[in-house]
Length: 223
Image (tube, rainbow, N blue to C red; front, side):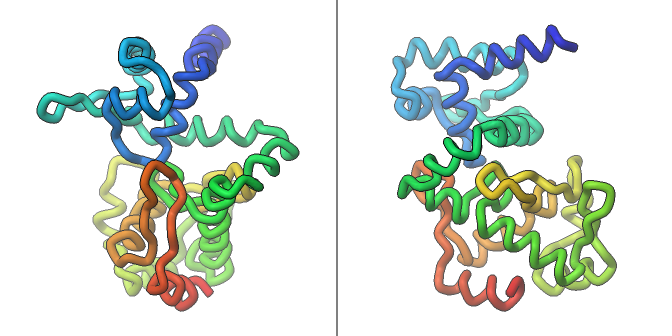
């Protein structure tokens, strides 16, 4: 086990590969060219790094037309990369968040396929307070009241439960150092907010903009 951990740590510890993985945390798939630009490296160098990440089963490549697009092989990879950010000392983390762009990321962002940041944590707090979910044995559980509440919100719970992944889990937020909601339900909430134009993605960033409609809806449902 210690050998395997060492190999993975060495693999993701490379500055270029770490930036590739951090870029993919917005949940999108990127071409090698796009990743080369975002990491400020050459096409030849990015190809070598991507090959290593694919061979390690951290990324998968999907071909569309003439291009290959890279994304995480599974959501656990995203959770692991986000978790590593928790090891950043508080002092350094606070300096990062004070930057204008990072401040937007800290306020409301995507964490792979679910909502994070101050807004994501506040939503989790609200659902706990309303007993839509409860915290039990370091995990989140949906209540019977919560099932009715989410159906009224417009979440198709039977469809969400059928997904071959964890239904609901707490995810430690690296900027807030508290939990937001992950898993299939967290992804369903994010999709609902995007489709309803409560929030909008920003180009080349994990930061998310809350719309005027979103402000009203978030206040209405989450207080």
